[in-house]
Amino acid sequence: MRFNEPLRERVCAGLQGRVVEIGFGSGLNVPFYPEQVDKVSAVEPADLGWKLAGHRVAESKVPIERAGLDGQSLPFPDNSFDSALSTWTMCTIPDVASALSEVRRVLTPGGTLHFIEHGLAPDRSVQVWQNRLNPLQKAICGGCHLNRNIPALLTTAGFEFRDLDAFYSEDTPRLFAAQNLGVAVAP
Ligand SMILES: C[S@@+](CC[C@H](N)C(=O)[O-])C[C@H]1O[C@@H](n2cnc3c(N)ncnc32)[C@H](O)[C@@H]1O
Image 1 (cartoon, protein in one colour):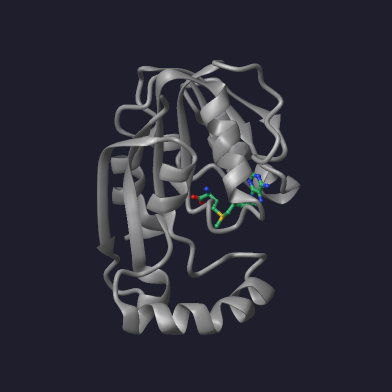
Image 2 (tube, helix red, strand yellow):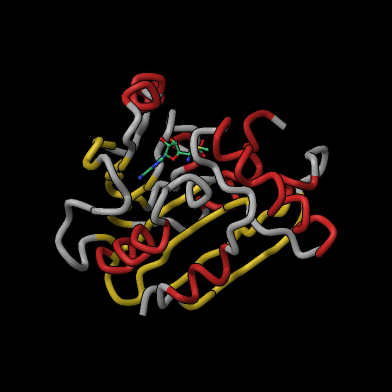
C-alpha cells in the first residue's frame, strides 16, 4: 500500500464543487479528487510540502491554488466552500479546535468535511502508551499528537457525522494505527 492510496481514494469520494484542503502537504490526495470538484484551495504552511507537490499540481485536471498558510486562521469569507478535506493533519495543527471552527465557518451549511485522521485508540491499553509517549512524539515528529480524540473534536466543533468508520490500520504499530475515516456535515 503506497502512501495509503486506497484510504485516500475512499476519503476523497464525494468531494464536490469548491474544496478547501487543510494540510495539503505534498499533494498526495490530488490524484483522487473526483471530477465533480471545480477547484481546490490548498492550505499548507510548509514551503517544502508545496514544492514537492509541484508535479501533482501541474498534472492535476482540477485547478489547485495555494490559498492559505494556516488552518487555524483561514483567509476566506464565511460559506465559501462546498467541501473540505483533511488527511492526517488534525494530529499536527497546534490549535486544532480553532482550525475545525474555521473549517466549519468557511463551509456552506450542509457542506461536508471529509477526513481520515489517526488519533486516540479505542483500547485503554493502547491509550496508556499513547498518553505516555505523546510528549516524545510531539518533539520528534513536528508537533504530531498521538492521542487526539478526533470524533470528539469534530462534535465539539459542531459537525454531525454522515459517515464514521473507526479501525486500526494493518501493519502499523498500534500507537499510530487507530484511524477515523468519515464525512462530517457542517450545520
Ligand atoms: C502528517 S502531514 C499530512 C500531509 C497530507 N495531508 C497527507 O495526507 O499526506 C501534516 C500536514 O499538516 C500541515 N500543517 C501543520 N500545521 C498546520 C496548520 N496550522 N495549518 C494547516 N496545515 C498545517 C503540515 O505542514 C503537514 O503538511
